[in-house]
Image 1 (cartoon, one colour):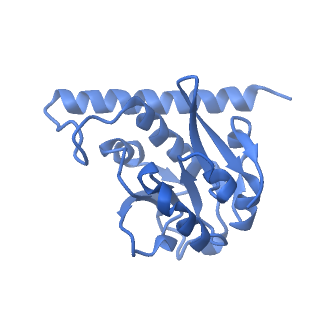
Image 2 (cartoon, rainbow, N blue to C red):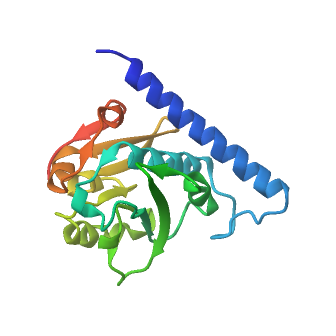
Length: 196
């Protein structure tokens, strides 16, 4: 098996993370508030997760009917306490994937999550995650979580930290049910699971 795709993807993620960290530090140096969405600067863990989420969007293929128009944005929704602050907005600013802009939406319970193409479930919502996963089970939405066991419950991608590094697992059965095609570039770096 060639290591070239793995190496190229790892370099792309590393470059994106560096850019986010530099942009955030520069922004803070010129008087930006530490975190417009909370009380402290975005942690390195969430700078990395923001970069990963952008890369997930790049390496996942949605069915054509997941978008109303050719120019419709890829909507990245966040439900629960937003751990990213401005970092995720900076990550996707002025970026396009297949000519589509990226749009960040911070959602509340009661809103229609089906307008999202990527939905990040914050760890603050662990108790309600099962409901979200059940509601979205067959929709073409890349559900990304960060709580132990959510991959087995139907989250397509679930972050976990091991040896002080951010990793992710991918539930292939959940991805197939959602009619999402996941690039081997993502799968090569993932712990692959199945079920639910």
